Image 1 (cartoon, one colour):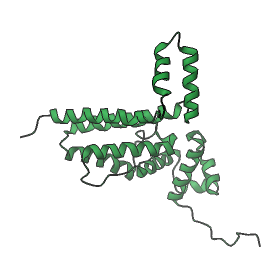
Image 2: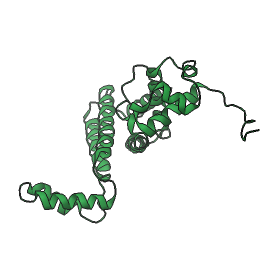
Image 3: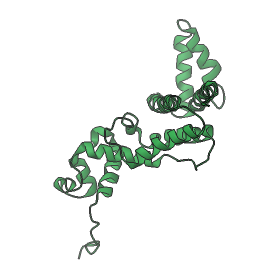
Image 4: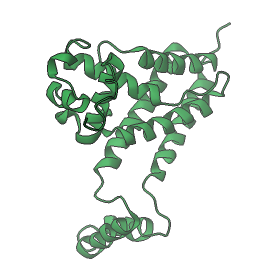
Length: 224
């Protein structure tokens, strides 16, 4: 008898379909995610997938919701700045594991429970801190824009290790010092500094946003 032939077959469920879809997207991007590729990942025929999802749109809804479910939720009562900082940093890490998700996070017309809880909890934290409805909406949009934009920018960089960073910076200095002195200056005096990490720009921008939101919240009129 062939080895493994007595193993019970794991039943296909919607949860397994979504986990398989995420695995396919993580490995090859959204362009690799089709019903056929998903069926291969799950070891089933394509028609079996349709017993659990109506089509690719529902799959995208589901895997986006899984991504939101991985983002850290600070405990109730966490001060708003700390809560927003923890969520933003966690979102950056999660999107680093699932780089295909950045362009999808706010694109779904039928968001799932993790997505809704994530957004509602953030708004609740800000409202509890005294933010008006309008300012809380501004805050969420600003923070999301910073996180999503930075993740896309970071993924597109032509370097990821210190050695690659040094090589790119030295090329800029050699090739652009004459025509583009400010680029060469940045490469020489910033990028080539020991310990330089482009990722540190994330926290720099995040703190600027939080500072601005704090000032805006303090300037809001208090309701009597």
